[in-house]
Length: 328
Image (cartoon, rainbow, N blue to C red; front, side, top):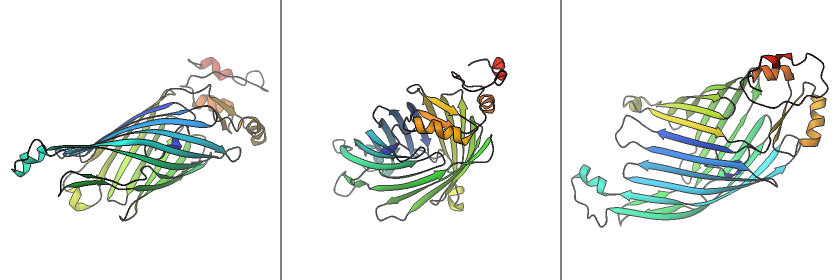
């Protein structure tokens, strides 16, 4: 999300490096392809920093963007934060019209067949985040840019406005529902929307489905490897019969790596009143997360993770299950 909203920089209170590769309509020659690389980090004094680099190729066109993201966190209460984001960078547009000559049969002057342009831009974003819901608004590029290749050919990058939101509904100790939506408005174009529903199994696997009003639907899955690597895969197919006959399948792969954070801590307490006491001291420290659950149950669910433990106010034998853990 940091690609379209700079407020996400540092919002996870972790150093997150992510790579995404998308192959749209993979069965077609010269189909659209996109690669995205992002890095997000929480810094001191409520500041988050990030960088996002994307490359989009459409037939003879290629657009590469590089942006620096900045966010500032405002704490409303013990569990709710507001992040204000700003991004700045540029898009590097290139068009190779020489690639058209082989298809149209016409001859293009090599001196005029290659076109490139640099378009600087700014973006803004807001993220409201709590333990059970989130909402965001962003305009990643405030200014419309037009690339005039010649008198008859232009490529325009319009202003995009995004509004998104979602929630986390805990069914029991092992299952959670995570619905979300994304609305996109592009200048004078109709509003488009995407709906996503995910089911989380413990702390290691998620699966769900998506639907876009631009006539596509898909399946999504994420697998957590240990405590610092997430691998995701998405498959999309058109919902319009005329497009389905063309076998236009889209594949997307995501790799997220948690590079760590400043000594992250999790406060686990089954008694909500006791957990509120911990929040009263540490709610403003974004490195600390709070979980209302039996600590022994939490340890069993996260037995594949590596972590240090500090106990307080417990009894002998309460955590005898630790003797069976291989890595603590």
